[in-house]
Image (cartoon, rainbow, N blue to C red; front, side):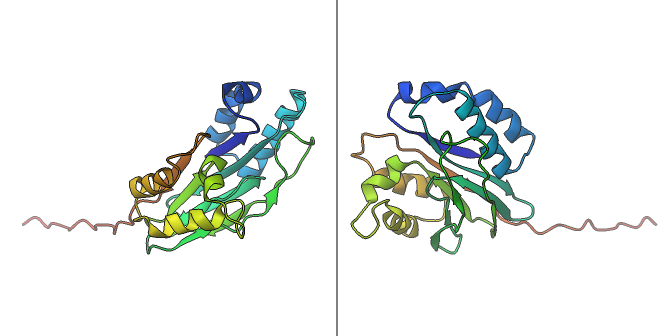
Length: 194
């Protein structure tokens, strides 16, 4: 999964990178590592030679069976986790530079363990900017407060974050990826024939 935010507003700002969707889809479908995908996108954006274009992005790969997530970030906030127990936190990630600034960038990956029904929350700055304060200008504290108050379901998380930004005129994107509940395996009964 990848969430990105192009500098500027509207379709005209996104047009120079829209041609990269096919490239992104191919590499995500192959299951490539998040850091490698960000490096590939960075080089493609730099090669497009668009002056003053940069993109923040966060890429992650979730293994629902193992209950783990691998994350790489290119100047983007988050991701955030809404734990099934109700706690909310920002994942500690090594944030690399935004995409499109310099060629051949390397991005670090962070791995985090998840519990059943934990949710990973990705947002654009249209969600976090209106929640900014003097002590948390990028809005992380406000977002964490909204997440803590939300019930631990994808619908509740989306509703809480979008409701908190109802008056926002910028792009406001929320993506919630929630692990399923862990099921116990049922062992079939042996039947004996007489």
